[in-house]
Image (spheres, rainbow, N blue to C red):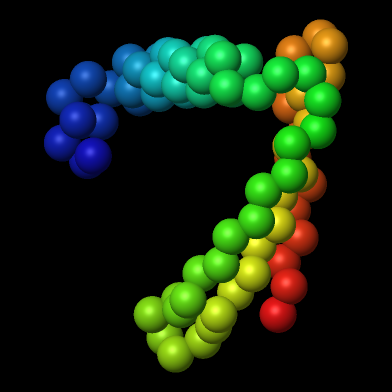
Amino acid sequence: MRELLQRFGPDVMAEAFAQLFTRTRELVRARLRETFSVGTHRFGDAIDSDGHGNGPFFIRLALTRTPDDRFHPRYHRDG
């Protein structure tokens, strides 16, 4: 990173990261629109371990897509 920053300067790097963020956001939103219809979708899964001897962790997610294509996640972790 330091080498890139020295080579291209902070303005170019900031613009590159801004473009990367914008492109990623657009691609993720497009995939979400393709995958989820309007309404609330619920998911659940378990993570056996965090690699440090803790777990299992149970995770639940509710993802709501509004008619104006906004996505609202709600997370809940059970112990």
